[in-house]
Image (cartoon, rainbow, N blue to C red; front, side):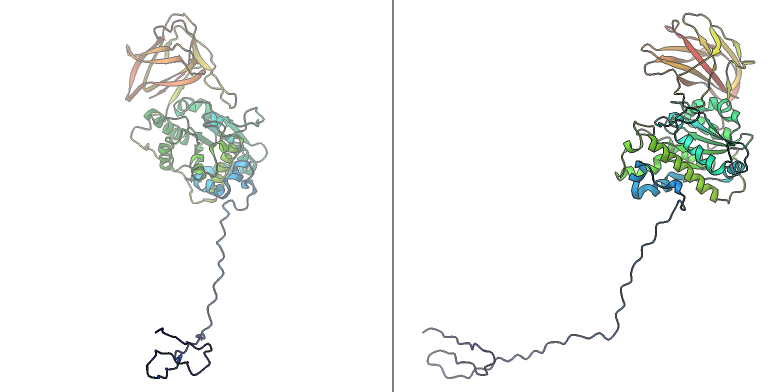
Length: 459
């Protein structure tokens, strides 16, 4: 027989219809009673603490409202949130600020103050478009000079000297230091060779030699180290920066400043440069602002009341080039015994014409097929020869004999050269000794014109 289940339709009814099976006893069902009482909502007895309103900490104004540093160019605007970080990271050190502050104070008094730049093509201004009153390209060097002139000078008392030569490093810089830099009695000297130097001991020692020579100059100039950027550069800064730290010098690095925004893809290399090394006009302007930022920060640091020059070099023996002295045809007394087939003349090398590089003009030229030998006699620990290197598919050179033995062959022509000055280290000893040097055309080079631009020696 079927089971029959009966459920009342209305819960308010107190009796429930009987349900059961046929033949069972009559049972009164237990009513469906809800006994659970819902828990009442708790009423808070304490007043809740309101959530505080968070105010972000304002970003510090590292420029202190100076409108000079407002982002203007497309590169500066594109740096966006990394614009300030460029300056913070790019300023490696203000170093000992005493000399720099003294020279800037001199300019503020209206006294003649000379700003000199020594470096390669970046310092010459390659990549810039506008021209200076001298007709040079208006690169970072001139732009930073303008900042010093306009902010610290009075009238025209701040002078500009650009002693850069394209494609050269500290090895040639040490040869030219007296003639092309210190002869101007500079008050502030900027050195920029980070993208032209290599990692050789020779380049490292001549770089430190420049620092030491300039710091020991009679008028006690302020020396500032600059590190440019390039798609291939970077390793030289690793040894230049420790030298700057050792001598407690101001240092700025465009390379370090641009590392973060380049890594974060905020900017591309083409935003800064149109080739592999030279800043474009926007890059030069940013470079100059970084130097200006260093100066702004340095003048605020008045803790240094003197500068103590380290008598010993950063490494033993690295003071070798402190006293490097150039020899050219303007004064050969006591050095050049016989010019032989080399004629003293006005010499030239390839130049962009963007700097005061009226340098290496008093050399010697050997005309093709002329016979004879140049002979020198001097006591020294080191001897450098500087030649003009021309572009040719067939290499030519000069054989250099020291005390009767062939020491080296210096190339005066090779593929890819551009009439550029090139140095070769001929003698390098720890103790000074008397030497006889003979120079003549190498075999197969007799039919070529060859030029010696200068020598330099250490004693």
